[in-house]
Amino acid sequence: MKGPELDAGRVFHALGDPTRRAIVERLSERPHSVSGLATPLDITLTAVGQHLQVLEESGLVRTEKAGRVRTCSLDSTGFSVLEQWLRDRRPAWERKLDRLSDLLDEPDEG
Amino acid sequence: MKGPELDAGRVFHALGDPTRRAIVERLSERPHSVSGLATPLDITLTAVGQHLQVLEESGLVRTEKAGRVRTCSLDSTGFSVLEQWLRDRRPAWERKLDRLSDLLDEPDEG
Image (cartoon, rainbow over all chains, first blue to last red; front, top):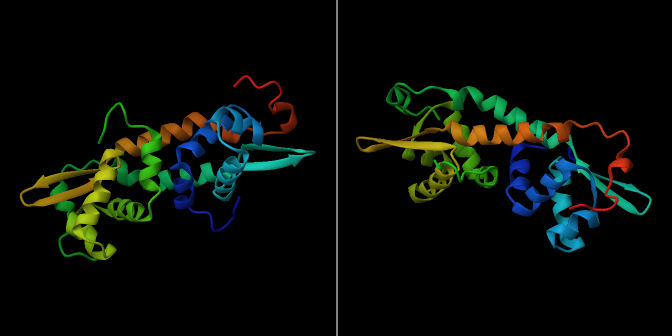
């Protein structure tokens, strides 16, 4: 989990991968060990480890070592970032565009 | 914009790309023409067109042709899909895990 530098882009990138989404889906049922994640996904522990690192860096998953077992569960940080990202853009995507052409780029300030 | 087959995976993939996120950011200010999008991003019209196609297929952007100008604006479909995806997983990512080890995979039903 990263702090200040965590941005929505990192979270979207993490969730753009189907295997990482499958990991998140399984962890939304309950926490799992790394090997518990690897088995049904039919991928190696190494591959799971790499995906978990991306998920941890994007604040979606946290892992904890208890004895010899590393336990993975969802982390709220990345989900909150997504939620905020959507909330900030809600006025824009809910906007009713009755007169679309009026809003078009005339002289472009950008 | 796609209907029934639109899933969150497609939307995450679309937003995993920094240029496509930049397009969405600009469209959350107001609608733009294709060339109005291309200029500040310093990419070709062809590249913008390809990104727009991905964004349209993921229900995030819609384009309309008025005369000779193609106008791009945000489409609520993809955003709603993301919102629903987050909402469905909220109980999981908000769960307080006081006794994480109790929830771990014992016999794995998966």
